[in-house]
Image (cartoon, rainbow, N blue to C red; front, side, top):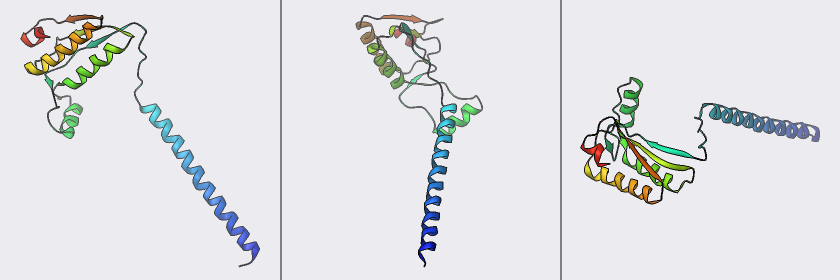
Length: 150
């Protein structure tokens, strides 16, 4: 192979590699813009806010059914309302240390029980939140025994 052919072969390979890298960067930029457009926007928390905890259905340790069944039921609007007790406990725990959260509003209107142990666990987290000096407000249209225990 002559030096001129080797030079053109090297130049062609360098240009091809540059093209591939530029295509990869353009695709990466496109997907980042697409992900940013589709991702949910998190609203900013004002300097003085209240955390509203409104559990729907029973408090559960694990959601019933497999994820595919739950997704199909949600698409058809037939999902069973359930609230993970861990989600409620984590929200209360993080709100306790967040200086922007001034109060906890507990709306138990749609709570459908969930067992004494889970209710006591949430009640303990609420007592811990209240011990931090922040207010707790409970709200409900009517109260059954599980709602009243909270």
